[in-house]
Image (cartoon, rainbow, N blue to C red):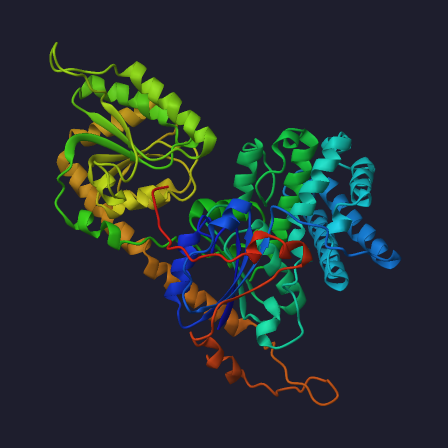
Length: 595
């Protein structure tokens, strides 16, 4: 079976999101052949190179989302008219009332809006395929004027009618970036099996929504290739959080927010949310199967229009061998130590954890708190500095006597230090593992603590309750007193800690292993291919297809699935050819740290 794996800012790049999951999936299904179609996010990501690829990856094709040179395509009068019609329809669909708002839009009208957006999107895709690209057209003054007409049209959203010229320019620039995959040459239908791009794969598997799923959507439209979409973090949620719309009631979609200076404008936020919402709704509608990573993501997808019959929850697979020694060994941790492990950033709410620890110290003066993890970006480094200052204020250094050196009961460490050389050792050091986040998707760090057989106290966010399943204590977020009470309860009861830790390890080994993840996707691949129509044809001398010339057995594994074929990287379109993906990228071993 030939799988087209679609990624955005992920596999095979060293710094890619969900890189470990994709690598484990590919290596676990060595009987199949994988072709990777990767969109990179930054030049630094390109320069960092690829991970070491297994032999079943036969080809990697890349294109950057962070830059696009002029493709040199000059459209004639007819092509310009086609672009104006399709882009104008797309802009009009964005300015209409949100179809996810049932009170504002009847069901029939919502279906009409979805069809209007889809017709415009595929019209642009067909034009790009016929003419060789749309980069220049999407950047043109005509695109901005089409947006302006849609915003000023009768019946347009009031927020859209308030858009000014800088807002329209920002939206047009974001749409050009988001629609960049339309101009790729991944949709060839000529040549042999190896040179036809996505036309020759049996299944398109998008490792996320948004830009990664767009090539799969076009392969579905042009060649009827089944599309499988996996989302471990729903992009609409990411889009709202990054653009300050976390409380917005809109529909599906997402991508990183556009230029942050302009996203603050209400008109820009509304139009971009509408675009990503319509795009995600179309992806969910055309996908043969959608696999959320947890029930939390599943609820988002259903709210965004995904058909419940297409949804199948497939939990991420974790590498369990790294935690086997700690999980199988007797608990030797200091009974008075709390441990927090993860990336240091505001969403982790370490401030509430420090205030909760102040309450814990009143009841258990011997308790210590170890915060283990590195800061994430500039914001994370600033937040870490703030937390260090707060810890110094709340807990002055303590000393045993007048001539001894004091020590703060809160320590800030990183993996690889003298006391926590490995991730497993970090979890092994705590009698209780604490998660204090206010925003969380799938809590990978919580699963790692469970694999180590540790009792946990967590905040009720994201998929935490689903992951814990009764094997740990859960408290409301932003509630230091509740967090403190739960930690004290476990510190006072070692037998309860042991019972919860053992139950947590058993649950993690049952649900969150690489084996269960790979087995689930193997079954889904087979099901999708069995339901897909035969798309390989033989032609007679006149060029007409010969019915029944290719028997169903031709889809069985053959020579093309062998591991001997070398990996080849084909250049992207003209605007991508000058990008860093044309440079040699040295394979780098894939590693995993705490999230």
